[in-house]
Length: 292
Length: 278
Image (tube, chains in turn yellow, purple):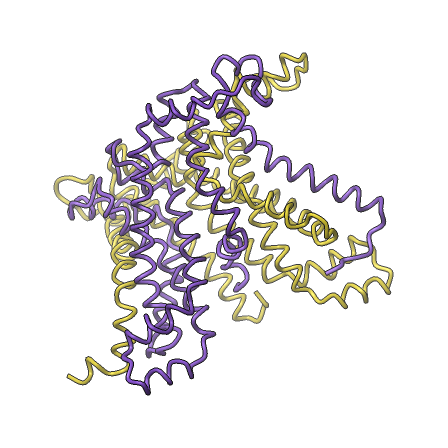
């Protein structure tokens, strides 16, 4: 009996509830997914083992390849534009004192908006009848045609990424500025004495010292770009003509429109393997002594 | 930190750039407010400005046509239910990890870390099939369990990192007075850790209020949907009735704006807490 009431067992009883909930919601279905990706199940009837058939099929699937390519574009976009903007912005913010908090709140607030609300705002701004392009046209400025970029094949992916980026980049500003305030002021004074320009100070003092946070931000952008779903689904549902299809929407329509359980599990498994691969790269780099 | 002594001209350009960027963040949200009190006829002539005539009845119309009394009750039920379940289980686990030093707890921390990096799409379909088996589809309880599970790693980590700083002597003294482990938790750890529970609660509550993917997948009855997915349906149903659509969005945003005004620092610290720990 005593083993059930030992200090160690009691400590584990405290952990058990959270483990139970998390296991049931995340771990168990993930394991099921790993098993189901090797079958051709469609949600009903018999489950047949088909080996890696689903994966061969995937690599031949035009729409899947398109979705992968769009996810790559998405990741590259988010690794450049929001990071550059946020770094500049955070650096400028550290140079001012008056109103700094107000600026920070302004930048951060969109991050707290629900995806559905950000989408609605920008859907209106780009609306073909009421939106900004139409309004400019009516004023005689014919720069942009009055069509919604969400409904054009050439622009839909970028338009969706823009909306998601608008919502997201303020988060980066806040984490960068937190990092910048941890930098020892004497380093800047030393740089001043050496006669460094502002850009040099940014490049050789700020950037190396916020490296842990900078690398962290790169990692979460890569990881968060893979399952991106809300914005695409709300704004375009992957269309028109698959021009904004990403992995998550591809999987979602395979799973819930066509009930291809095996096939969509295969996509999910690939997403999982990729994420774990990225996380372990950063883990290994940390082990190797990169301060990240 | 003073990066440099800025000359006046530089300061002006700094403020100009920052103001332009801040306006791109804030003006679209202001537009949402303007449009929520604009009569439908005015959208054609005044799509972006402050409304010429203010029509507050948009809110009443939206509230009645969208049956929002029920919808807001649904969302609130989800938030409160998730908070109760999530904070209870994560609080217990966070306390144990911080103060009871169980053997093998590192394995559990690694499990949670892997847990947060699994993309939702990986497990959403098997979860859907499981929930169907269990009869949890289309129920609020089903979604509450999902939300509690999804947010469990974050909440556990945050609570653990707070409780780890509490002095051990506090608990030793209580133990001498004959308190059992559960009493240590709710008599001592809980009352002095309220700040972390508040922060965690705000972040988890916000995530649940805004959540879209799981609400879309697991609740199909209009009368049971939370506000996020109802707005999604609303957008196509009342396609060009912008006054109503915007008024609905403002109503969804209102609780967040109010809470954000009171708890800015907590929200920001909570939402960015992953970054500072690296």
